Length: 304
Image 1 (cartoon, rainbow, N blue to C red):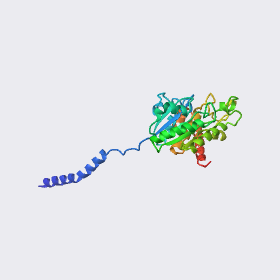
Image 2 (cartoon, rainbow, N blue to C red; image 1 turned 45 degrees about the vertical axis):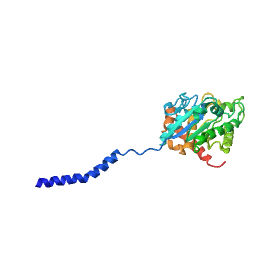
Image 3 (tube, rainbow, N blue to C red; image 1 turned 180 degrees about the horizontal axis):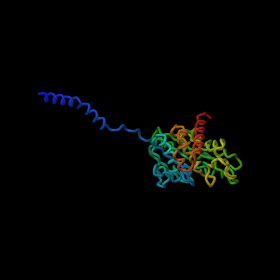
Image 4 (cartoon, helix red, strand yellow; image 1 turned 30 degrees about the vertical axis):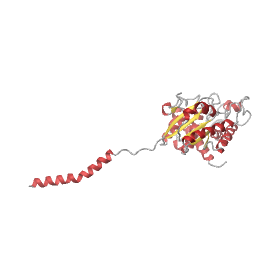
């Protein structure tokens, strides 16, 4: 009789615990909470987007989708890594062709691009118009055509225009269109064209890369004239042709895109930022360029 009571009590206890065990099993078996879908971002540009003539060109090619199949990582791959370090998820695609403007991309490549995107970063030819340097006519026409195409696919798409840097070869050499003018002049002329595209609502914003380069010169982070030697402690933002960017120049470009597209402070990436280390920039150089990008982005918030 005594053993019967014990058996009864054990059975009762097990019965009481059964609902608890069922809840525990349900918790273990519950599906994970779905993460927010990655944002899609498309880069359309040329050698300045590719990171041409530097280690940036083939950087982390496996992390981005090159729609042309050329195997370019470029500035988009640096952006991707920066976003990951900030805890952000972007599916990054790019379509580039060296030496070409937006007219080329629209007329010959739009079948690759005509789809739904969350963000698009457009970058035109370095002088806006090869035949008429500084003339924004082609920029205005083709940024408008692209805007119509992208907004038909996604009315909420955000289109940013990358306004690029002054070329030293166009400024310091007699053949250059900006010869005899300050090194800052070309970037400001490119920005003036970009402002017209913004006023026409062809784009939603401008990424002021050229003016970030100007700021780096003014703040003595970078040397403004590569033809007379690079001052000790300063960066050369151009590569060997004094036209394209160096690793440092493209890194600053990527920082500006990261800050403008994500809304995050580039300084959050810090001295240990991985792309800078991979590409051979020192911690001090990375931080200096992050500070330049931050200050330029902040300056853009003041109405012009």
